[in-house]
Structures are given as C-alpha cells and as structure tokens.
Amino acid sequence: MTALLDIAELAKRFDVGNKRLLHAVDEVTFTIGRGETVGLVGESGCGKSTLVRLINRLLDPTSGSIRLAGTELADMRARAFAGNPNRARIQMVFQDAGDSLNPRYTAADAIADPIRRLKKMSGAALKSRVEALADMTGLPRELLTRFPHQLSGGQKARVGIARAIAVEPELLILDEPTAALDVSVQVVILKLLQQLKHELGMSYLFVSHDLNVVRLLCDRVLVMYLGKIVESGPAAELFADPKHPYTRALISAIPQADPDKRVGRLRLGGEPRSPIDPDPTVCRFYGRCPRGEPRCSAEMPVLRTVAPARQAACHFA
Amino acid sequence: MTAVPALAVEDLSVEFRTRSGIVKVLDHVGFSVDKGETVALVGESGSGKSVTAFAVMGILDPAGKVTSGRALFGGADLLALSERDLAEQRGRELSMIFQNPRTALNPIRKVGQQIADVLVRHGGATRSDAPRAAVEMLKRVRIPDPERRVEAYPFELSGGMCQRIMIAIALACRPALLIADEPTTGLDVTTQAVIMDLIGELAHESGMATIFITHDLALAAEYCDRIVVMHAGHVVEAAPARELFAHPRHPYSAKLLAATPGETVSLAELASIPGGLPDLRRPDLPACRYSGRCERRIDDCTKPLPHRVVDERHVVSCWNPL
Image 1: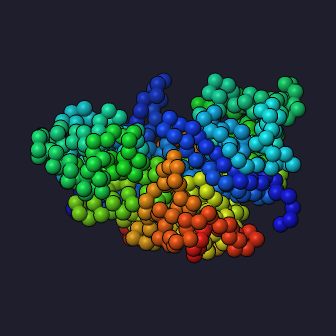
Image 2: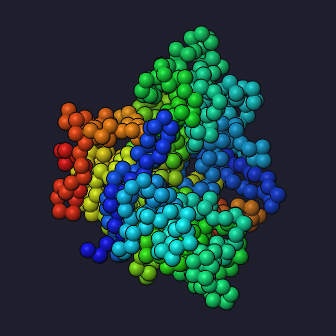
Image 3: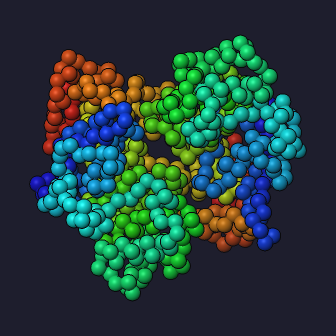
C-alpha cells in the first residue's frame, strides 16, 4: 500500500461544559494515495473543517492516528509541529485568500514567509525562489510588491496557492479555494491547480460545497455527515450512483439548468441531529433520512464496502 | 404577454461619485418583471446587479445618484417618489431579502418581534395580534416548532433558519414584488434547494413578481422563468431561461455559460473569460463595455449599442451576436 496519508480512527471531541462532549470528528478512517485528489464534501457543521485542521496539525486530536508516508504525526502537539520538518510536507490553501493573507505583507513577503521559516532560505536565493513561484502560479512579477488590498480576487488566490506550494508539500489541503471567486476566474484557478498537481506530483485534499467542481477535479470523494464519513468512492461512480441517502440528497440538490435532466427531487426536512453526546446506537442521519426504519434508531450503521472501491454507512446501501 | 408588468425598469443610469472620479455603474438598464414571474439578474461581481436592486428599492448609498430612468411599479415611478411614500411601499408592496441573513437581522431582538414589527408597521396588525401572526409566518416558511422559535435570537439559529426568518419578514405583508439578492450564498446546497423551493412556492401561491439576483447561472436557470444577463452596468441579453441556455446570442452570455461547471465532463472543457471588467471611471468608455474582452468584435462595435429583438421575449445588445 503506497498511501501518502493514512488516517485511522481519528476523533476530535470538544468539551462544551457540564461533562458534555461535542463529537466534531468521530472515528474517521481513510487514505489518500500519492498523486491522488480526494474531495471532501458535506454541510457546514459536519466536521470538514475540524478534520482538515487535525490533518494539517493545527488542532490536536482526541484519539486516532495520522500517518504521512509512514510517519506518525498525531502524537506531536500542534504547537510543536509548527517547527517540525514535517510541517513543510502538509500545506494548506485557505478559503478566502483575502482574509487569510496578512494585510501588512506584500505578495512577495507572503510567499517568502514559509520559505524563510521552513527552508531557511534568504537573500538572492529567496528572491529568485519567490519569482519562480510567481511565474508558476501565473502571478505577474510586477504585482509582487503589492499588498493584498491592491490585488484582485483571482490574484489573491494565486498568492495563496504560491505560498502553500512554496515549501514543496506532498499533501496540499484546499479549503474551498474558489468559493469567493466569479465563475470566469474560478475556471482559471481550477486549471492552475490541476496543472500544478501534474508538475509537482502533489496529492490534494479538496474541501468544497460545490459538487460540480468536486466532480470535475477529484478522483475520489468522501461524504461527511455529522462527524462521520457516510460514503466514499470514485468520483464518477459516486455521482452516477450514490449509495447513501444523504449523498443522494446532496446530488439532487445541485442546481440543474436542463429541465429534462432534473431527476426526482429529494429534499431533506428538518435540521441535523445535535453533535453533542450523540446516541451511539442511532444512525446520525436518522430523522432527516427519507427511509428511517426502526433498525436505524437501534443500530448505528458502520462504513462498509458495498461494491468494489465503494463504501457506505447505511443498512440499506 | 400584453398585461402590464409588475415592475418595468427603463433607461436606468446610476453614477457613484468617488475620490478617484465618477463611476458609471449602470448605463441605461432596462428590463421588466410580470406578475407571478421570477426573473434572474446574473453577471459577475461588479456587473451592477445589486446596484440595480438598491436603486429600485431607493436604498442606494448616498454617494450613488440616479442620473436617468424610471422604475414603474403599480402606476407610479419608484424613483420619483418621496422618501416618505417610498417607505410606505417598502415592506408592504416591495420587499427585499438580503445576502447575509445574520448581518441583516437585528442581533439583539427576538426573531418573532422582528416579524411582528413589520406586521404592525405595514400590515395593519395590532401589537396584541402580531405575535400570533408571527407564529403563522414561521409556519409558512416551514420552521419546525414555531411557538418556541419566535423567542429565539438570530445567533441561536442556523444560517438556513435565519434566511427563513428573513423570508418570513419579507413576505409578511404579501408584497407584490420581492427582490432576493443572492439569498442562498453561504448556505449548503441542501439548504439552498429547500430555500429556493420555498421562495418559488410562495411566489406562485400569491402571484408575486420576483427578481432573483445571483451569479450562479445553473441556479437561475432552475428556478427562474427569464434571465437578464448584466455586464459592467449594461443589460447585454434577456431571454427565457431555457432559451438562453440552449441558444445564447450575446458572446458574453455564451462565455458565462461555458465557464459554469455543470454538464461538462472534464475541466478542460470549461472555458475562461479573458480580460476583466473595464474601468468604469474612464471618460472614454467604449459603447460596448464588453468589446475589450470580446472575440467577435467588429468595426460596428464602436457605434451606440443596438437593441436587437430576436423575438418578443428575447433581446440582445450586440452588433455581432451569435
């Protein structure tokens, strides 16, 4: 097995007082292969961001393991990880480049900062590295002296990508990298990401709301619901034939321009169950699930293989 | 369609005075919405979608000035009404749903009271009836357990719930025209679908005219009867949704469609739109503000924009349409 990232039974529970625990990420297991692009989808509050912050080692997990090419990263405190050589191996492109760039750093400073810290580069070598990165991400060199507020959305997105790939990561986590962009700019950024992946041989974990974008960019997709992975599989198969009722609802909610292609609308009623001390014997989707049989409230379905390369956590998948 | 439209915007131009010059944000914008019809305004950021809505509602920023045009609504020109008359219309006849429900709702007032406020101010309800009517409104927007939710503050509710509260406030007095400015941005696709279904059903029930502002073409196509495409303050094309998707005539509409992920099977098929919006402060703005980005530019493009009628419901402003 040549998985780059191997996540096993990873969990994060937050103490919310009165001995109650919020199960943000609940015993999640998956792998990402070298050169693979894995999509992570799910509603807000399902634990996507917590999971990403655990993998990126910005948060300490409650239990479980995070192995990057065989090296265990979960034992190390998040604070200590910042100075660890492994820090350079996992990098992240944040959601809104406008908010995640330091407003007092020029584009060049923003890109140089991680190289200076993690690769101990300086002077002319650093300058030429920054320029090379600008070229790679299609950021005109003359914009390097500008501050974030002097750049357009697409240019800021390029700076965010340039600084993330500056330290040559093996795994790049992309948290809705194009959510704040117009479609015309989104296309350019998605194509840039695709091209960089080929050139640099990185693996991507791509977090997104936009299922159409996930479908185009990802090899494999993980669907998360209330802290658990409820379905995983190759992107094309998962979209064509979703096994879990939640995945089915997600896909049927994608706006469909062509009226002939709108198939049986599946709309979810109600709100998700509370993630605080969830009942371990009840399916997390019970109550919103259109099926919801007695067994679903008596026995939590586990993620199991339902077809080659396909997994789903539903009794009826 | 010979009936008088619910809203007819004609020749609307808006300028903003800024320190770096006058920005010609809207230039002779025109479109109409029939009773019971849902019309989408689509375009990139900066195309003037929201400014159009703000101008119609009379809530433009003080730096913005309407330099020409009319917005005919129920026999009156909204742009010519006094602030007092307009305030009477807003809330009762005209309503708006804003982009971010969390910032648009009053954070320190219970949501039930916020709905009741509108009913008392515009709906002729008394202070004693209003709370019960607020519960009814929450039922209409399908909020579970409405008796308890009227007592909640916005921060206690999810984003989807807050958006439903906004819709309840906007629809409380059964307006004749609703403007929804990106009502589902920031919501999950599953919540988005439920909210859009809800707006559609309520509009259908009451024969309300709806203007839906979005940058998501697929969403516009699924929920709207007609689509008005805007670019840099111009209406470049207006057509029934299905027809616009099947046969876009303006080069910009076609590019926008080609850039939208949806039917496409690979990333390579998606086309980007070269260039950006022109600087709207320029004194020498070209007649066609898209001409700088356009691959179909011809010599005629420097002449004032034509208003070409493809058929009664489909118009395009282009000298060299597809």
